[in-house]
Length: 216
Ligand code: ADP
Ligand code: ADP
Image 1 (cartoon, protein in one colour):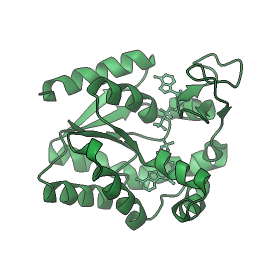
Image 2 (image 1 turned 180 degrees about the vertical axis):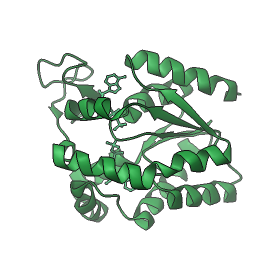
Image 3 (image 1 turned 60 degrees about the vertical axis):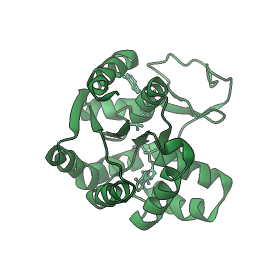
Image 4 (image 1 turned 90 degrees about the vertical axis):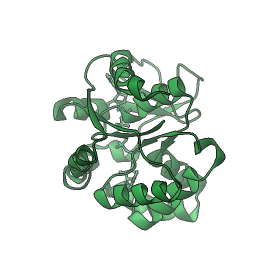
């Protein structure tokens, strides 16, 4: 199963990706996570990406695409994958299509997580990430009274780019550059919209119902 998750920042892509990928036993490939790991590791890629991420802009396509190509070439991605945060514009989508075609592969399904703007802002404002295991939490919705991860005990942090001003810019970037992917994938005949409001488990169930017909 080769899947892509699209949706605005804060829609719940990372959260749903954890559960969907584990249900399907496929790797979850989150470009934001890979960039953040490079930033913390102080790599050249991280130093370059950070300048864009701090502003809420997209990292240049050639850098992002090379990174995804490497990741998709790894053994664990040969029988399927779940992409979260990639592609993020039509140019990336076209290159992904060509790359997969060269390998005799194609996307099975693109799930669009649909939520309104107010909910997105609420979700981003309270987002916390575990510094050890990378799990995503929410101060209000997960009733986090401490700054510890319930899964591993690691310290939670707030992402630099979840500050109000950067959030506003990221939402603009989404509307301008990423939202056109919805019609691109609708034209390709692989798009399905999923109502991403309500409890996390219900959203996962809705997503799994859309995925089930494509399971071998
Ligand atoms: P969110 O889940 O809030 O949408 P991500 O973790 O996916 O954010 O991405 C964080 C940042 O990483 C983006 O704002 C962007 O700077 C960079 N990034 C992630 N994926 C891509 C991509 N496919 N193309 C370009 N930049 C990306
Ligand atoms: P994205 O990857 O699309 O930017 P995340 O998965 O990081 O989004 O989720 C953003 C925030 O919203 C996180 O704090 C997460 O815990 C919270 N969240 C995700 N899904 C839901 C949901 N169904 N209901 C309430 N909060 C949610």
